[in-house]
Length: 511
Image (cartoon, rainbow, N blue to C red):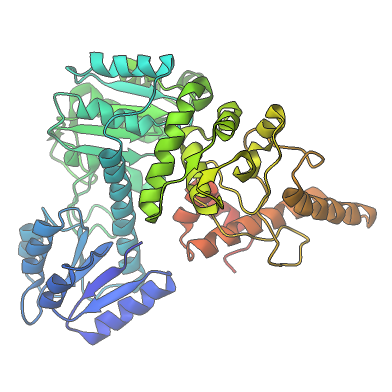
């Protein structure tokens, strides 16, 4: 991740922000004036830019204009301590991510920078997906049916509901629907309704007026306004809080909405595409999802097949992801043997295309030769290897269904050593302890001995105790890799943001 740039002629402001962001594990680079920033942009780009307004040698607003002309997607937070706040806000509202009035609370400043950082990372991922995968891959009949549906919908702006398992590529389909629609020239705005706290989701969707709640120091446009004339993609719609479902239904019904704290209705000119991995019909019966909203969203439904339903696409996807990982890591792309491809085709991939992509990234890093053989494959494929009669691969580290490679870590009961390994993910079809390859047997045997010793000693709650240790080690390892960034750690572990927060509290990892 790129550093955060701080621009302020006041040494005290720079010092405070540098120290606060360093405690968050974020890299920071500081500047005293706008000229230094513009010169630095010739060689590098920050993840977020935080700039004062009034500085010698050029104002922050002039810097904002120059930066946006060169790097339009860069989030810029503007700081000001002057009384003409309203006029300042109105002059840069279209370009700045947000402003930070001085004096500011350091914790709130860090929270705001974190929001800008998350937005920047989401936009990067979306841009990369759009640029590198202009069209989806898939020759399987199930995918061809999806392509035909996208073609039939290319002249329409009707509401679409995309269903499919996690990792199957629902956002990619939403991008394709937008790109091949009459609204292709408008913005594509995506929001994961499950990833944003309930208290913030309403403001994220509909925006807020200045003073609407504590911390709302300026008017902010929501995603509906940002997507005006284009497409709004509501991912994981099945997790939307029930009370917000009513507001969404009203927008879809009459095309109008209010900002939080607002009194004037705003017109919505947005095509909505929603996606979920959940069974919405079941959630309607349970009373956790509005039936009228379900029917409003379910105008056209596209079901995206799981990867195990389109095994014939695995070879092409594997080669594509190996090439993509090689470009990202600036190394020569690896090739994969036919026997190894056959193993991949037999694996169920519970994490779908996302898991295959991470396996390919893992292989790019961990496979010792330029040609990937069956013995080089990660351990969760052991059952598929057994089915083909191939030799089980050695275990050194293992990619999860939704995370990039991570460093080895010990398991409960281990003494940390250089040979400690990550246990195979608990998703998919996994080998038993007896059938595990030699590298995996080490930690399984240690776990078995630790369990046996506790049971023989009459220890209470053995299951809960070992589970807590195991979960704590996983979370600590992920937080170490991400330098304390919880959201990123959750993504690497393949769990939800709320889950990792709850687990950290339950396991006492905050202490």
